[in-house]
Image (cartoon, rainbow, N blue to C red):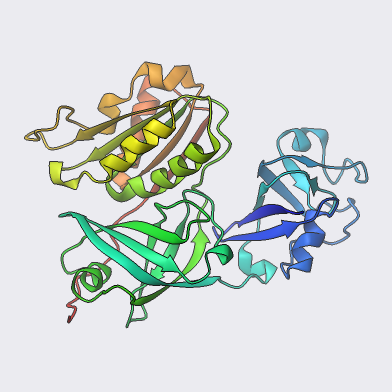
Length: 343
């Protein structure tokens, strides 16, 4: 028996290790060739101090206050040389992965499907060569290589961890390098590779009402989170607001409806910014974010969308004088330069 520990490094790289009952996280990492920061390994120097963001653990008694104060322990700081876990955990490591001799993890798979689910969105599904080797936290992204080039693009998983197939929602950009390859060249069975997982935008333990805000293909990581929550269940209220620019941009609605059926505590709305839209709800996500949802600030917010959307939500919260307990967000912006692609 062992527990899975996600080590999330300062540069956004994440690696999973297995920790045996009674084994310290530091020893487990060293055993799996990850050199976490340390000097003494005796709970004296504090060099191995990290933060546990999720999970159950014991700090032990064999460390001194100068290495870890009671206030730090209360805030979730830990000494990995003393920390022994009794559940899966997420541990934030305050150094880059390269400082711990962590090499980028490369994963490969074959194209299972490329679906143009709207004029603006491509759904890419990859059949993974080794699904068990790919660990990620729901909400994270990878750098997907464009076949035949030395270029890559960052995309968030819309699938859940542990699935045999990985899926991504990709903006269909006219003249875009990845978009062009997917729409003109890709065929089932074509090989693709990616590096990751990456990112600090991921689902934490749901302990209070939670608001999920998605703009365009920013829906992808939110879907990954909801898939996990649908499997594990939660009594906390969840509310998704999904915003797009035009009617034709809206995708994955049947999937959202299916998730709402599996998750009784999930409510959701969708809105379209185009004033000429035929959709019943128009405007931006902030137009449909109510005081009831915000729960006087006793809520957690997850937001993924383009930079103007992220900034608009931040200003909206500031002007209302609401400070959520936790506000996790990820900005994304088009990164593809127009490139001609031959079929």
